[in-house]
Each structure stands twice: as structure tokens, then as C-alpha cells.
Length: 276
Image (cartoon, rainbow, N blue to C red; front, top):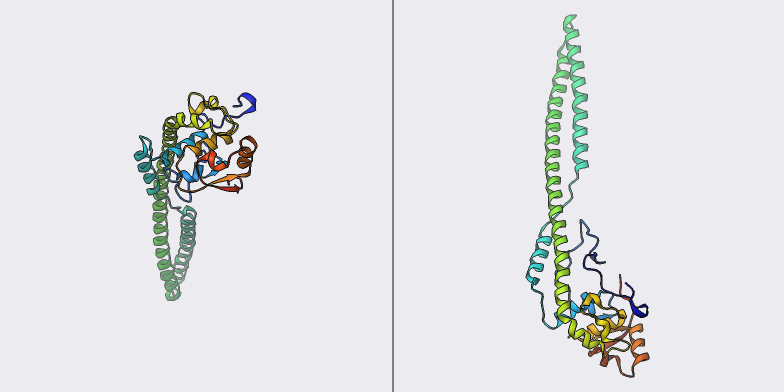
């Protein structure tokens, strides 16, 4: 939403999915941490994060934690514990089809050889060679039937595993949804706790106004960059903050003081835009 003076609110509505979690991937490469490291959120400006994320990260640098932190870790561990391995149903189906085809071919051959044996008997011809061929074909048919039964059993086991995997995937997706929602709850809780300090910090940030803070983090209606600088200022990071050119320029244009004094931390400058 756009506020006074063309300023944009950086806080997503509570019910809206957030950019890094909106797409639930069925086979993630690795589970995200239940609680991200603060430096990963506010270690550089611009942060590319929402104000709520920034304030929650700042809170964690001060040793604060949400009331549901243990639950976040427990749910994340449950997500990580669910392994979903692919099942090759196509290969199992191909095996059944091949075995069934071979069985049918041999059935036809056995029937033909039986007919040949019967025909030779009717004319009282020698049947030893024909009986040998029939016996050999019958043995091959028996083996083919055993292979077809084994293939069908393997296909059923693969189908059962596939059903179990679908159930596991559903459980994992449900847990990931729960984890995403509870992460949002934790950020909301920590952001509210940090909001008074954030409002005070805006008075030190060039071009910011404490009145923009609103009554809660979701009501902030000021420049996004100013909010990021204020969030960093109230944090206690254990490493320098990387400031982008826009942040350095904003400070230089509006106040005759070093960036370190604005963010109350050592800085490294400039850095490029945050990666997507």
C-alpha cells in the first residue's frame, strides 16, 4: 500500500504468503532453518526483507526469543525427518508387461507343440523329439509364469510404497505449512516487542520520521530503506553491516555524519543488491 508522499508500506499483510515461503516445494534440496541467523536478514542494507523480519532479526541479536521458538525447532526437525524417495512405478509396470508377454508367447508355443505331438501320435509317428520340445517349452512357460507372478508382486509393493510416499509427502507439506505459519507468528510477536525501540531509532535515521512507525509494525508507512537502517541500529550484530550505495548516499545527502553513527555499528560499503 502506498502512503503519504509516495512511500510504500514494506510489511506484508498477515494473511499474505511471504516471498521466500509461498511456494511450497515437494522435494526441497534442504530444509530451511527454523529460525534464520539475524545476520542473514539484517547483515546488509537494503535487506530485501519485510520490516517484521528485520525487527524479529534485531530482537534475536539481543537475545530475545518468541514464546513458540521450541515449537518451531520441533516442527522443523519433524519436517527434516520425513524422507521421500522416488519409486519407479514405470519400471515395475514394464517388467510386468514383459513377463506377461513372454508368458503368452510360451503358452502359444506349448499349445502348438502339444498339437504337434498329438498329430504325430495319430499317425503313429515318432514323438520323442516333439515331446522333448514340448517339455522344454513347458519348463520355460513355468519359469515365465513365476517371473510374471514375481513382477506383479513387485509392482504391488511399488504401488504400496508409492502410496506411503504420497502420505509422507502430504504430512510433510502439512508440517511445512504449519512451520511457515508459526514462523510468521514468531516474527509478529518479536516485531511487536521491538516496535517502540524501532520508533525511537527512526529519529536518528536521515530522512525518517518516528511518526511513520504507526501503532504497530504493520502500520509503518515510511521509506523502506529508512526502516532497514533503523532496524539495524537497534540490533546488536557481531559483524560489520554491509551498506549498499543507496544507503550510503541517503545518509550522506541528509546528514553530515558517518554511516557508522547512523546504524550504531561498523560498516562495510558499498555492496550490491541482495540476491534473489
